[in-house]
Length: 227
Ligand code: C5P
Image 1 (tube, helix red, strand yellow):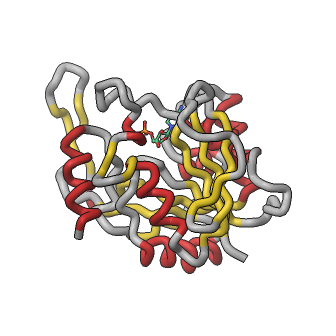
Image 2 (image 1 turned 90 degrees about the vertical axis):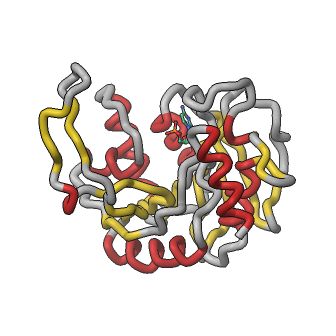
């Protein structure tokens, strides 16, 4: 009765630099992605995982894997995040009906809190889908392309999209496929859903559910996970 979770981890982590893809950088005794998977696997409402990897990623056995007793399937990702998530959706077991709600969570967000996953499920399922998000705290500037600010966005109506995001399997599949067919760059699942005419529910989540993007983020994640 729980939700399957697609975990895209097929990115190259170009912004991080270095040779090790960021999902395999170690935090304490484990790679970042293992922290992420174990956090989610410990949640009673998470049923299993599709981990989406770069096709040449030989780190994982393409066989039977479990995380804390929950099944983990492997799918091969694509060029863009949307390609990877769509491949993950298509690798879900047939038992996950098209009407079922599926979680999508970045491999690079190891600090996600159980209570946020619970709140997302409780609020977004009755709303037809949604995402964790955090209100903007800083003032948001519009750049003019020449390094100068030529406007200030109203902060009250701006949110930062986090993960997990929760949508119906069939609707998200259709929305991602449509965005890819249109050649639109999609940076999160909710964006594809918006394009398809849905209005994803914004569910406020903890600020410290950070996406590890730079070495400074890795140090912060290490601190947050040690608490
Ligand atoms: O690049 P960004 O930090 O937005 O990536 C978010 C997540 O999407 C990461 O976990 C990354 O591995 C994944 N990703 C992917 N396939 C891509 C690009 C990113 O699975 N082509």
